Length: 185
Image (cartoon, rainbow, N blue to C red; front, side, top):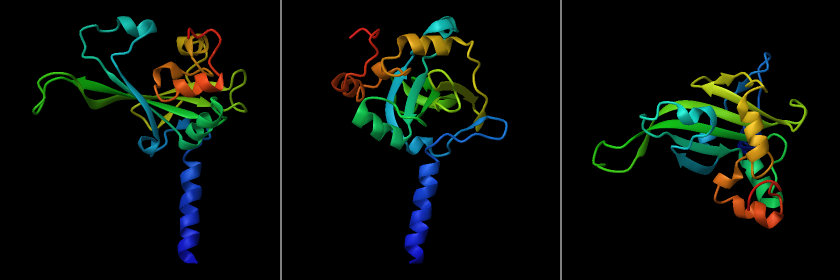
């Protein structure tokens, strides 16, 4: 009996860690276990907007994207992101020479973490908001005047998100007919 109760408590805690949690000041708390979530994709050296012109001599950075498991399962069923979706973007530096590696790039130090959250009750309009953690465990919402909002709204393949860069989810969106009509496909 005690083992079943403890197992149930672990499941409840794990489920709550999959939903956005905010401080009393409205700051998003970084889920400690996001690296255990569903991995969607990595990009190398992807830049757009103002960041495209930043330090062209710098080694390309890796972007790793993770999504909370409940949102992933819902996307597979519907082709859309449900409320309480959290997409975590982990940005890492890259190295090209180290240990036995003589070519190519591998991931190295954490540069920053960003998150896109869907919470219709908290964020009026399309329900999405962006948060920049840097290397912190909590983040304020990025102001709506920033370019990320317009760019995602205009260029996101599905529901404000860049599903076009997630090779396992783009076919789902195509099959479910949920691609943004403006997305060139």
